[in-house]
Length: 171
Image (cartoon, rainbow, N blue to C red; front, side, top):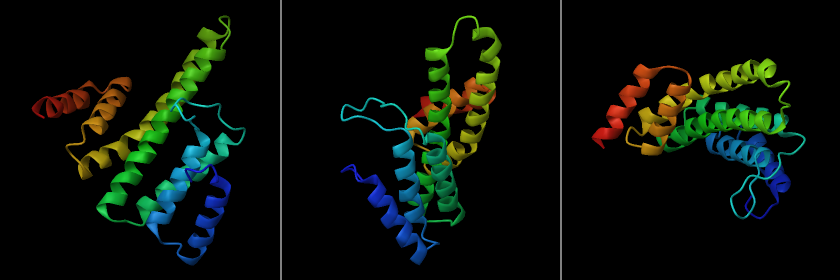
């Protein structure tokens, strides 16, 4: 996957899934592959333009992350699937917001802002339960707790954000 041969890797993973459709690791790897193709990064780690089929790649990644979770894999794979799916939803919300702010005309800003915010909030609401589950599986994972705290604040759930702040301050 790291060599840039994603299409070949995805084809091989799909062949493997035909033989082992209930293998959560294959679903997790395939989801990560689609996720990476949807939001490519350059060698410097900076985001590259999204491909034309990004929405399709998002849906495929989402499907395979959910399937990996549904198959109740080991705690490590379950943690990774929940974390990655939650992160993907959050990253998609950030992408939508940033793309809107980059491309909106000032005359359309007020009219379209609520629509974009609603779409982003919907994705964040989807992210929260997966990140919550990740923190159950790894309660001391500071970066996941910090991300979840930010999402709670974005959604106006200050009580949950305060609970996490207490956990973070104990560590």
